[in-house]
Amino acid sequence: MRCGSDLRKRVIDFVRGGGSKADAARRFQVSRASVDHWVTAPDGLAYQRPGPRGPSRLDWAALRAHVQQYPDRTQKEGAQPFGVSRPCIWSALRQMGVTGKKTGGLHRAESEEKTNLPAAARALYAPG
Image (cartoon, rainbow, N blue to C red; front, side, top):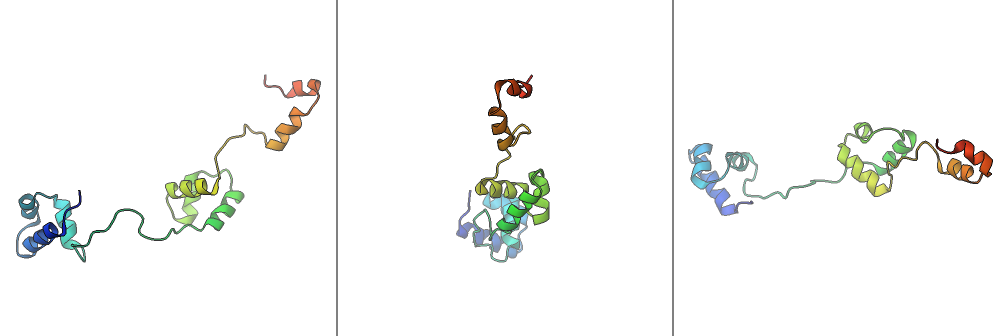
């Protein structure tokens, strides 16, 4: 839970006035990590909302070209050249409509050709 700025100000004043961080945590019933964060932050009273803090570093055009050039790479392998995480690549590929759907080794054109064959020839390609 987020603590109010008045509590954060009292904790910072207590520590800067000579109290220890552990004593401040016990006295004001907050975690020691929160006390440490508030005291060491440039502005301990400001609240930073969690989440992404800037524009994406991912160049989508370069990612699309990379996927076309190396279609068999895993997401982890694809993330390394761009310096981003695997979930970042996963999200970008999903938004671009690129899926990891397996075709069973047949491309759509080959599959359609084999279904248009006569019955005798189709039997040669039947799973067996």
